[in-house]
Structures are given as C-alpha cells and as structure tokens.
Length: 214
Image 1: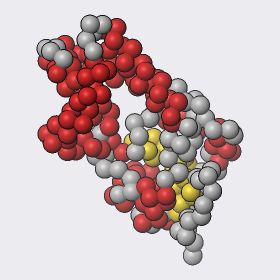
Image 2 (image 1 turned 90 degrees about the horizontal axis):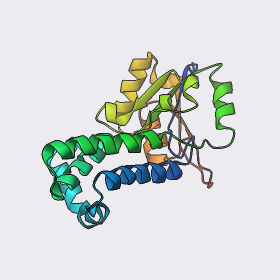
Image 3 (image 1 turned 90 degrees about the vertical axis):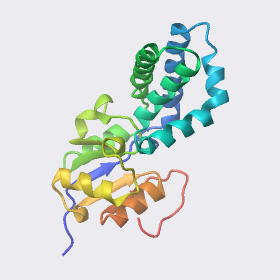
C-alpha cells in the first residue's frame, strides 16, 4: 500500500527564487560596510589575493565549517581583518557586523513567477518544509507563512545529499520517508539525496532534461 504524502520539502536557492541577484546584493552590502569601517584598508584587493589561502587555513583548523557557511563567511572576514592589521577584538566585532549586513540583504529575494501562488495552494493540503544547503532562512522571506518547517543544513553540520540530513528532518516533522516529496533544482543534492533517503522527489529543472529516479 502506497503511503499518503504528508510533507513536501523545498530547496530554496534556484528552486523558489534566482539566488544570484540576492547573493550579489548581499556581498555588496558586506563590502560597503567594510569599506566604510576601514576606508584606508584595501580589503577587497587583499581578499582577492589571499582568498584561497584564507579558506584553506579556516578549513584546516575547523573542517566542519564546510557545512556551516554562515560561520565560514564570518571566519573569513575575521581572518582577512587580522591580515590587514586589525586587533582580534576589532576584527571579531567588524566581522560580525559585516556578516549582519550581508545576511539582511540575503533574504531580499525575488520569487520565481507563480511560486507564491503554488505554495499557497499546496500548503492548504500538505505540510511544507524548507530544506536548504544555503544559509537563507525562509522565515525571513515573504513566503514564510506557507512553511511549517525551516531547515538549513548548517544547523545540523551535514548537507544534502547526505541521507542522514533527510532522515533527521523527517524525524523532526514526525513523518516517514515514504510520506515525503522533496522538490529541488540540484539532481544530486535534491533528487538523488531524497530518493536515497526513501522519499519521493521532483526535479525543478527549467532548462529541461529528465531523470530516471524523479
């Protein structure tokens, strides 16, 4: 007997909205803050020059930050400021405030056409959850009211397509895997991950293409 669907989970970035404009605006807000705070420091140039080195240092010291992208960004800014000669106290404070500037813009998203209408209709019959590897929090967006759950991979320290992440969120929602449909744009992370975890999947693929498992 086929189980009834109780929960539909959605990826966010490039599934419900185009992520690029939001990320560009958020990054610009971060750099506006840093430039205003440290007008004499060539921080952008320093970041371009040492990005690879800084990332490697952070992950060598704390590999788990690969799954905590918000903490990783703040740690990157912190180390960048130390490189520029700032004190640890100043660097920590400025990194926190720069990330806050980034994060405020991160949620000013432009939904894909009809996304809100579709969510409004679906939410009348099913529980909806957001499940993203990104750091966007659906509760900070205009579509928050449609969602009963908001899950970000960085809250768990594991990322899609790891089936453990899917199982953890299904458990929190009180549903079995075969009672879930997951919708997302990434075939590996969203479709293959959900199916491997025992759920059904819908591949959001505006560019076309087919899947043998969705």
